[in-house]
Image 1 (spheres, rainbow over the protein chains, first blue to last red):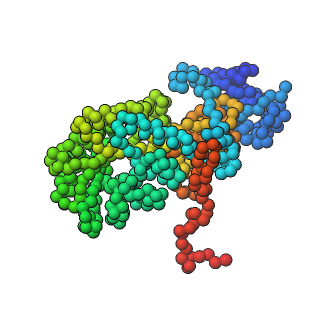
Image 2: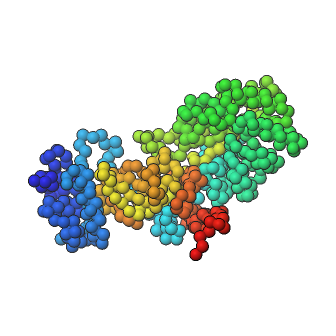
Image 3: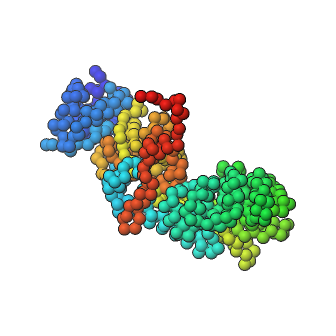
Length: 78
Length: 451
C-alpha cells in the first residue's frame, strides 16, 4: 500500500499520516487533488476535473497540480 | 455545486512549535493598491515593472519632522543631505528646498550638487578619496572640506600654495563610542593620539586653518547614547585645541547613521519596538551638547542624515514572473527585480505587500530576482499566499541607497517616478534601454563582425 493510501483524510482537509505521525491541512483545492491522487488518477485527468468543478480555474491549472504533487514529494508522501 | 478555485495548498501542522508571530500567520497578509492615492495598476501601466516610486509628501514630512526635532532643541543646526543615499536630482532638490545643504563624498557627487545649483559654500565634502583637482575646485568654491588622512593634509597645503592663501579645513575623527563595528578606517583616531598629531601637522604647516571637526560613528546606529559620547569627545577635543593651539572651531559635524524603520535581518522585534524614536537621538545629542559646551558657546552643528529621511519614502513595485516548488517544500517565486536593484536586500527584511487580495493559505515562500545568480534572493523565507504570474509586490522601505548602489547587470535599470502633490506623477529617471548600455562601448575596426 503506498503512502497516499495510508493517509487518513477527513472532509475538512485534515490529513494524518500514520507512518510518521505528521498532520497536514489542505485547502479545498488541495483536498480535491489529494483525493483524486488516492484514487489513482493522473495529473492530466485531475486538471480536467478541476476545470469542470471549480469556478475560475486558470487555463494553466495543470501547473498547480504539478506543484502540488511536487509538494507531496517533499513531504515524502509519494 | 461549483466551488471557488484557489491555488492548492497542503501544509504540515507544526504542533508544539513556538509561534513567534503572536497570532496565526497563515491568514495575515498585507495588500496595497495605491501609493499616495495613485493606483499601482496605473503606475505600472504607464511606467512598466519593476518601478521605483518615491513619495514627495513622505519625504518632506520626514525631513520636517527630523529638522524640527533637532532644531527645537539646538537651534544652530543644519542638515547636509547625504548625496550617496540618493542623488537623483529631483530628490536632492526637494531636500534642498526644505533647507538642507549638500554632503558629498566624491568628485562626481560634488559636481552633481554644483550642477543642481548648490554653491560651493553649501557643500560639505567628505570621503577617503578626493583628487587634487577635486580639492582645488572645492576649496576655490568655498566648500567645507573635511580631511580624511595625512596625504590629504599635504594635498590641501599644495592647493593653498597654488591659491596663494590660507584655507579653512575640517578634520574627520574616528573614535570609540561603544558601537560595533567601530568605524576606524575613516579620519584620524582620537584615542590613539593620531588626531592630535594631525592637528599639530596642520598647525605647523601654516597653510591650513582648522575650523571644524567631523565624525560619523557608523550606520544604522541603534543606541542614541553613542551620539552623546561622540559629542562629548568632539567637544572635549574642540576645547583642548583652543587651550593648546588657540584654535577656535566654527563647526561640529556629527555625521549621520540614524536608522530608518526597516527590519534588519536577524532581529526578532519589529522596527517599531527595536528602533528608538528620532526624539531619543535628538535628546541625547542636544543634552550632550549643552552639558559639554561652555555657557553661551553654540557652534554650528551639522547632521548628515540620509537613510533616516528617505528610506520610508521609497517603494519598489515588482511583478511575479514564475514560481516553482523547491525540494525543501518552500515555494520559490521569481520576481522581475532582484539584488541588482535592491542592494539593501542583503541586510533588510522588507515589508512585502501585494497589489490585490489573494485566496489561499499562506505558505513558506522565498522570492528570487531575475539574475542568473544563486545569491539573487530578496526574501529568503516568509509566509505568503499562493501567487500567480503577474501579481505585483510592493516592497518597502527601499528609498535609501538602492537607487545609487543598484547595478547594471544583465538587465536595464527601471524607471523612477515621484508622486507629488495632488497625485501628480513625474518621471524622475527614465527606464534604461540598450543605447544607455552601449553608449560608451567601442569595438575596434578589426573586431567588427562583417555581414
